[in-house]
Amino acid sequence: MPIQSIGKSLRLRRILRGGRAVVVAMDHGNAAGAVRGLEHPAELVRQLAPAGADAILVTPGILEQVCEHVGDLSILLRIDGCVSPLVGGPMRVFVDVEQAVSLGADAVVMNATLGASFEGEELEKVGTIASQSRTWGMPVVAEILSNAMMANHMDMSGQGEDALPSHIADDITLACRIGAELGSDLIKTRYSGDVEDFRKSVDACGVPVLVAGGPNRGTGLGGTLDTVSEVLEAGASGVIFGRQIFQHEDPVEAVGAVAALVHGKPGIEAAV
Image 1 (cartoon, rainbow, N blue to C red):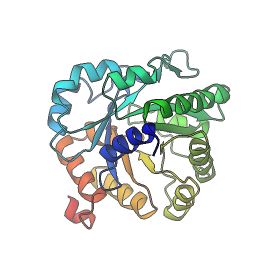
Image 2: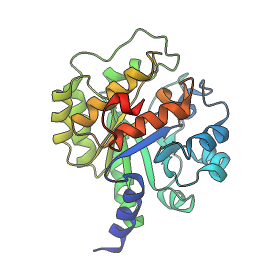
Image 3: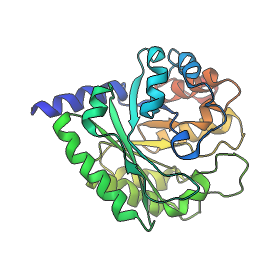
Image 4: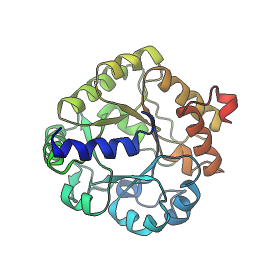
């Protein structure tokens, strides 16, 4: 086995415990600024570390704030950004893979938006970093969405009316496959809302798929667990949930219930 493959294998094993993962995303401020629930990241991580999560997704600046509290959590490091909602545009890499290794990351995460005017620039970024990451034994998580998903996905208020379009399944399949073709080790994308459609997306990918939560509409923990149950049935390897966890009235309860489902305790009732 090549030396670089050992590093990837070990890091992926830390993230995908038993082949599945519950990741709490905390990188929202990178694109949206102050987000409700993330006012005190160190305290949030201190609470979540023993509660059942496998990993957190953070930026380098937030990792520096929370590092004393991560415990056994794996670290997914957001390495692109440099764009705000005031301007928009492509997300640019601001931390290279070597720096991610020095920060103790278990994977690097980047975005790409299919159908955007800057699609080619962002996809090239994913492919280039995937190539560099082979040298360092660093897994790559590609968060690939489509332009049609963005109005819904970027609603940080939780009060918006935009929903994912009903025809989004084809976009999700395209995102999963392109991410895998570019060399990503894990794909982060949205759930289409239909188990059989999403199963086709997962099957077309060839690498593990982790499902992003999107906006928290305040539907309660039951709705979140319904989603988790369905994506697992479709073959997903877990979830990367942010607002469903840290905007819940009890984040510890929320992550514990999600982890119970993802890691094999049967039934939503048992998880709750």
